[in-house]
Image 1 (cartoon, rainbow, N blue to C red):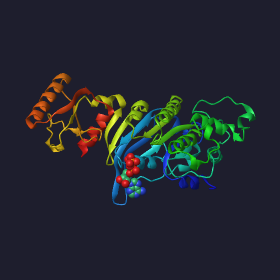
Image 2 (tube, rainbow, N blue to C red; image 1 turned 90 degrees about the horizontal axis):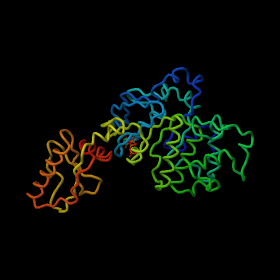
Image 3 (cartoon, protein in one colour; image 1 turned 60 degrees about the vertical axis):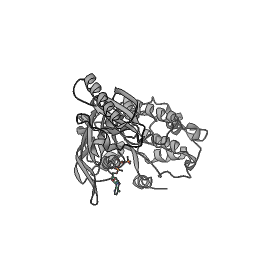
Image 4 (cartoon, rainbow, N blue to C red; image 1 turned 135 degrees about the vertical axis):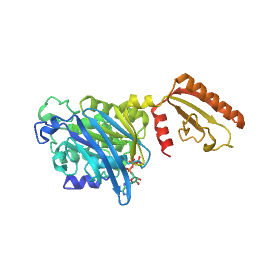
Length: 371
Ligand SMILES: Nc1ncnc2c1ncn2[C@@H]1O[C@H](COP(=O)(O)OP(=O)(O)OP(=O)(O)O)[C@@H](O)[C@H]1O
């Protein structure tokens, strides 16, 4: 068992969640934190692994209390960006600040306000769920504080709060209830399912009454119910003033939780704005399926410069995002042109649809245009 929090964190592998405790603003964090408009600041971040530059000039800011979602393709650089913010890597270019501090240089200053939860492979399999939370609590500086969401301090209930309920510390049980793991308190970690391990990860982050949460794909592997439960925990944390940086491949997760988002591809941010602004960029979408096999993507016509994208990985669903001009005339002209194109080739456009665009359409367009 590690004797030091650093060792423990390193052993637990890849970070998914860093939770910073609600700051005592007059305390160690200094006056700067009290005046911060932006809890997270990333300016021109570059990060190279040897010759390969994984992050190529990324900038964004997260105001206090907002949830910012970093979306992107596999390998886009989201986790790398998170790891720099978590202080696990020094940036090779640009600057980052968390609560006004350099996460690498001021790691020790930030740590008392940071709880860390890791993505995978870091649990000690022979410990039970309750023992894992207990260990984590013991590693935290203020282990005795009641488990509660940020800013919603529980009324003191005296020593009984930290008594033992059937052999399990009640404080531990509180956090397990929060993430729906109370029935697994005495189960060994290695017997948990993937989704249950993610819940345990979340429990460890929430334990530290976070002010800032870094969530790297927090709901991967969870069933739909667990995912919704997790969203509720995150929403409650936000409602209590927590600032959250989230990466996810579930666009509905970003749409539901985020205030602002960025879409990354190959180390760069391609779209950046509020969820509403981003979805509005999508305009109308004309989509259809091509039944035959006698076409290739390159055969599809460009519509006034609009490049089609192959949507949703089906290999046959094509989508055009129409922007500029009046919506109706744009859509009419696009449909007419597409029908002419299909007639000319003897193809059938199945499920031809015109609809309002979604975040998924914006994402697909970004990726399509970047290719
Ligand atoms: N330790 C490392 N050494 C070398 N290359 C790395 C390392 N970590 C990541 N990379 C590379 O950097 C790029 C960005 O990886 P990163 O994990 O940041 O992407 P991501 O956006 O989080 O991807 P995903 O959505 O698949 O998790 C990838 O091409 C990856 O192979």
